[in-house]
Image 1 (cartoon, rainbow, N blue to C red):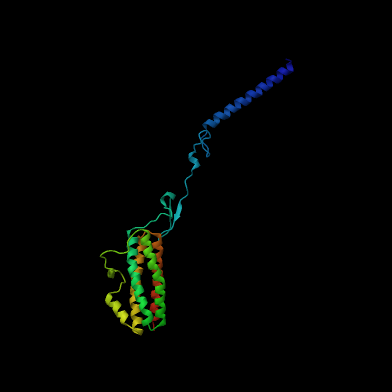
Image 2: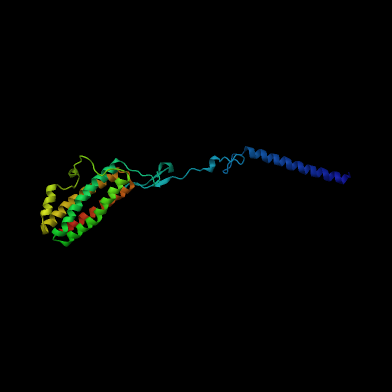
Length: 231
């Protein structure tokens, strides 16, 4: 081997040694590093940083209340039904309550003198008739009976007595109009109180929306009816 070949061989050997030493240094440094987000390549196990915590969710409050933030695991999915005994009670009470309003409204076409009273009665029938069906369906989908054995529906807020209903049925013309407005106003006010109470204690979202609609719409209807009798 010539001296030139010897020098080349020594240079190549030194270069190889440097590469090997550098590789070992890098391997040792990698062993001391924490697992990356991709996890351990050898085992395929995900690292803790691979599942970052989800951001909090904004949950709307009840009417009149501000929204609040909740952790995702504290918020139930929309498909999970939520209701309580107070929702059930409200639905069961509102069915006969609506049915009496429909009974009063059905008297108006043949007895009211003012066509505007008849128009109010028509709106009540158009709105509350389907609502009774909605309330019954709410109970049916939960396998709950609509009737409450032994309960006196006449004790509910706004419910009119059997004698008052007979007087309304016997009235005609302007006398009917005045009695209808007085009785229906009292009846609506009872439904508003019942609905407002549910908004404070109910859990079912559909009933919260229903009760809000009853409170708003019947409040407006009271104002319209009273305006009809204002001189």
